[in-house]
Image (cartoon, rainbow, N blue to C red; front, side):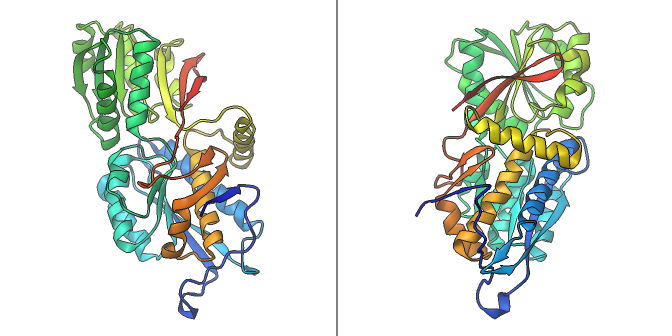
Length: 380
């Protein structure tokens, strides 16, 4: 069975009763988890906003089940990008009997939390997690709507070799599940391409001084520095690279590929010096849907999308559509629909493979000009 829906054409009828009168309810609880505190709070709040926007739009239709109005309730939790805190809030959502979870943002919190959701039989759709380990666990209710690091790292490596023509590469990561993972995948992709990895260094996601590792890297004269980590570290690192006179191209994955990077890096951002990739991307006719979403988001929250908001929005809509089609908000009932769904969202077509990964996931390559992100190309 294959189900095709568009965000503007979600059916009115959704049966929420799960297994008889004991499960009948007027509220469907959707959990959301992201770092609302800490260095990545701007990304976490971006995600939370998008989840709330989707819930508000669905409730305004109104959202009904077999002709009966049902209220979708967002239960948002802060994991602080900390694995221990992530598992704690995951258990909190389980105890709250949520009907599904959108999250987490960071791979380091998503992977350990996913076991808790799996054990409780709760469906989880991550709008941002890229670590291959997440879906390699083969939990039946774990999905993601963005391409994994295996694709992201390999694509960036190919671009560095084929387009930038680099020969010597230094690699830095922040030792998080995401940062180390995307750096490892980049190195895998670069091997055999006629390049040399002249240094492999690491920091942590709480550090602020990178002088020692950057000085060591400078002596090796790399053409390119690849960084695995978030924008909160990449920005200050770019400032310190400029202060040390390091002229290398700077490359990284979606964690640093944000609108905020230009502000965080200041004059260290340069002109066309930074290359990054965002997991996802649209082109052609799909661009209008994305532009419309961004305009609605800005009108509602008086700020621009930071990074993952469109994927969060689509994650909520995909989950809601699966519930509607299954005529139940019981994860056991709507899970089979998710496995075969074909959904046209603001981020493009969403379908999942047997592991829960998005099929034919796109990537968008960006650089920075005048401190602002500038699209290079969408690749698949």
